[in-house]
Image 1 (cartoon, rainbow, N blue to C red):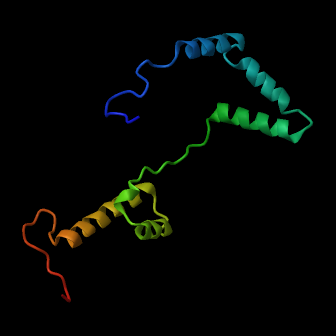
Image 2 (cartoon, helix red, strand yellow; image 1 turned 90 degrees about the vertical axis):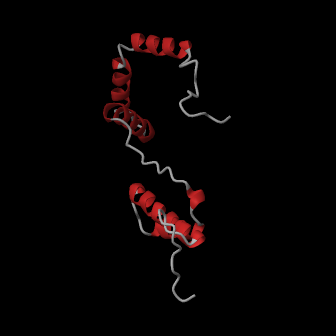
Image 3 (cartoon, one colour; image 1 turned 60 degrees about the vertical axis):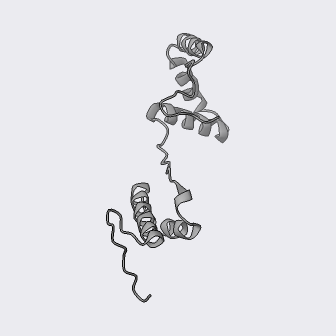
Length: 127
């Protein structure tokens, strides 16, 4: 299924049952206080797995899960060799996108012999 621009992938919205279930859980656990109390008790458990899980659960909910960087990159525009070079440079995603734009502009000049915005062909040295 292909999503169209400005069109929701879930036009019906969140299922009503999910909203109701979340409300029931909040009511039954005093907005999560019961769950936190349970996790705090689990921190006292004898086995390390239970303690680790309780610690992780409390950390995730108390401070939020760590942010994850996602690089959305159109890799179809560059060759595998160019991608390897970019990866070797340890660039941030923003820097990488800027460099890819530069590489694409150079590739366009080489392929067409035209500098963008110019009607005159470029000179190629040594040819």
